[in-house]
Amino acid sequence: MTIKGWCPGAHRPMAAEDGLILRIRPPQGRLSREQAHGLARLAETYGQGVLALTTRANLQLRGIAPAAHAMLLDELAALSLLDADEATERTRNIAITPFWQAGDGTPDLATALAEGLAGLHGLPAKFGFALDTGPAPVLAQTSADIRLERATDGTLLLRPDGAAQGQPVSPEGAVPQALALAQWFIASGGVKEGRGRMRAHLATGHTPPGQTWLPPAAPLPPPVPGPRADGLLAAFALGELPAATLAALADLAPELRLTPWRMLFLPGLAALPALRGLNLDPASPWPRVFACTGAPGCAQALGETRALAKALAAHLPAGQSLHVSGCAKSCAHPAPADTTLIATETGFTLNRPGTPARTGLDPAALLRHPEAIFGPD
Ligand code: SF4
Image (cartoon, rainbow, N blue to C red):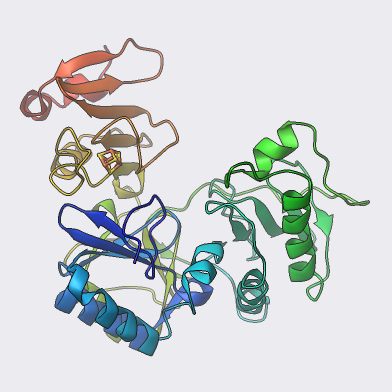
């Protein structure tokens, strides 16, 4: 068993100070009622009673005793939440729009792509696919290397990330052509020492094969929590989903879809009762607040992050983002935020675009005067 690495899976967990972290990638990006109940039970039995929603639309269990790993894998397999092996799990890196509609073909594309990827070798671990094939594109800000999306007239498009336009593909040809594009990426030298991303590859002058190119429909901004015409988006502080809340949601919703915004989408639901950790406020800061594990869970952390981020969230100005990181690696949110706090050996460093960095900040002082963080300097 390998227990270190940047991309944990279920077969290949990551070791943390408080036990193993297992990442679960639900097939088609959704959980049935039975799977949700099962995961809630596993989080209570083997973990810390909480599941983490990730920005890759996955779920994580942490605090797993190494001795329980094999038993947990058996349980995940019984719930149809385990890939055949580590290589299959690692390659099945597919972000799926949660807003797909019955009859639009998205679940079938996800299944066919997963099956095709199982036979494809040589892609980097972070290389991913986005199925943005719902009524409107929503995954433009979600990391992916090969995208299936739609033109304004609904035509399916295959677009390498970094290209402005995509090639029209038929529903039957979409997956074979996506896999062929991935093979072109490998064959044209996109992978170096096991790493590589499509956008960087195109930026160095490599041109993917294709004759006809069309622009995709304009992407929508990331959605906010709360009711929508097609269901409910449920947010949780820092993506922390209490197991009891997951079980309660499973009783209320026949299906739960994962999203890359650390929210759950519950299709067809218009309202929910109050549940622990649940936030349906469209103005909620949680989709805009990021914090890594920090101390004491991560051995590399130079400070506590999650309690600080939760305390500061209430003061975050509307529309702004906050990232609290336990060290400079910025695992939780590699992209720049409006306000970033990074723990160092001598206190936190505060970074805000356009202003000089402030160093050596004491977290207790930050909490006493949060306006000094977010307000004008
Ligand atoms: S950013 Fe640093 S402290 Fe936070 S989880 Fe990553 S390695 Fe650990």
